[in-house]
Length: 233
Image 1 (cartoon, rainbow, N blue to C red):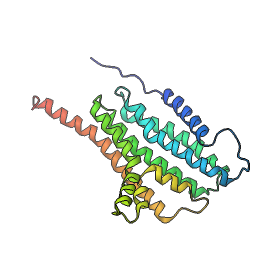
Image 2: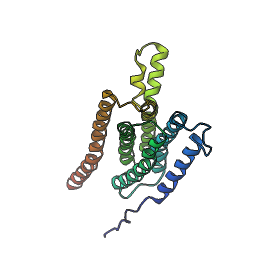
Image 3: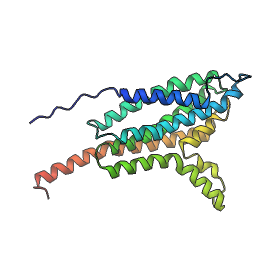
C-alpha cells in the first residue's frame, strides 16, 4: 500500500513570526523616535542591540518553534527551506543598516557570514532532531542550541572569576552573540585576519555537522534493511 506524503510547503507561519520578531526587535532596540542628533555613532548601539535580538531569534526562537512541532515529513528539506526564509529576512535587514552605521562592505559581509554560519550550525542540530518524535532528542537539541549561544561567554566569565583564563575574549567569541556584538562594534575598520580565520573554522564545523546529518539517515536505512533481511537479528 503506497502512502502519499504531503507536498513541501512554504513555511508561512515562520514567515509571519519572523516578521513579528523583526518588528519587535526594531522597536525594542531603535524605536520609532529619531535621535536628537542623528549620526552613525548615535544609531550604532541600537543597531548592535537589534542584531543581538535577531541572533536570539535565529539561534533560540526558531529552534524552539520547529522542535515543538510534530515530526516533519521532509526534515532536511524543511530545515533548508526554513534557513532560506530566515537568511532572506536577515539580508533585508542587515545590508540597509549600512545607511546608519559606519560599516564597510567587508565589515557587513563578515557580520552576515557570522550570522549565517551559526544559523546553519543550529539548523544541522534541528534537522537531526526533527526526524523523530522522541522528546528527549528534541530537548537535547534545544539545550545544544542554547549552549552554542551561552557556552562561550559563560566559560570566559568563569575563567576570569577563577583566574584560569588569561584571554577571556577568545572564549567569549565562540558564541554568535559575542562574535556579532564585537564585529558590529568596531565601526568602519576592515575585519581582522583572525576574524576571517574564525569564519573558516565556523564553515568547516558547519560542513562536518551537515555531513553527519546527511549520512546518518542513510546509515539508519542500511541497518534497518539488513535487520529485515536477517529476520530482525
